[in-house]
Picture (cartoon, helix red, strand yellow):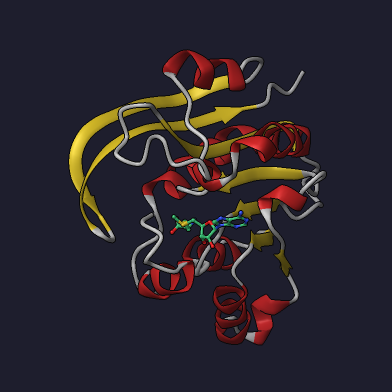
Length: 207
Ligand SMILES: C[S@@+](CC[C@H](N)C(=O)[O-])C[C@H]1O[C@@H](n2cnc3c(N)ncnc32)[C@H](O)[C@@H]1O
């Protein structure tokens, strides 16, 4: 994200779009896997890390999940709280926090982090990733994007990038549900962009 665009501007522009495909893929995987290790009488718990405007948070709430919505940008979180109807509000837990301040995350059956983890500064990434891995209950699903070295943003010192090998190492011990490498010209909020993205859906084994 160029530094002349604020996260508030980006996030506000996301209102009204459809939930990302990564959420659909995660829910599909959770439907077939997370339930294996989850007592039937316990509501499922999801984390949306770097949730922004909260489009996916709302979709998760509507699907019956308890949702921890985490982002550093206060205005987007305020809009999320305001638009969430009272009947869903009791299952919404909003955390305004910076990635660099995250040591521990709630235990979860699903962690969704769309286009958010690469914006963690390299100095904090290892700790944040450790918190993500530790939050995954047996059977839990993780859906996220990681950016590779061919991405136009590569070299931004405030962002974290991974080679394919490094990205694979991050998910070691998880079952890969889907792994897609995108290395192509496309568009971003700010205009044309070359994307190099690893789209990952993975599951912590039950046993
Ligand atoms: C590209 S947006 C993705 C938002 C949303 N997940 C989506 O798919 O539209 C990245 C998000 O990360 C948040 N973010 C960026 N840097 C952050 C940081 N250091 N700590 C916490 N949140 C941060 C921004 O506020 C923004 O909501």
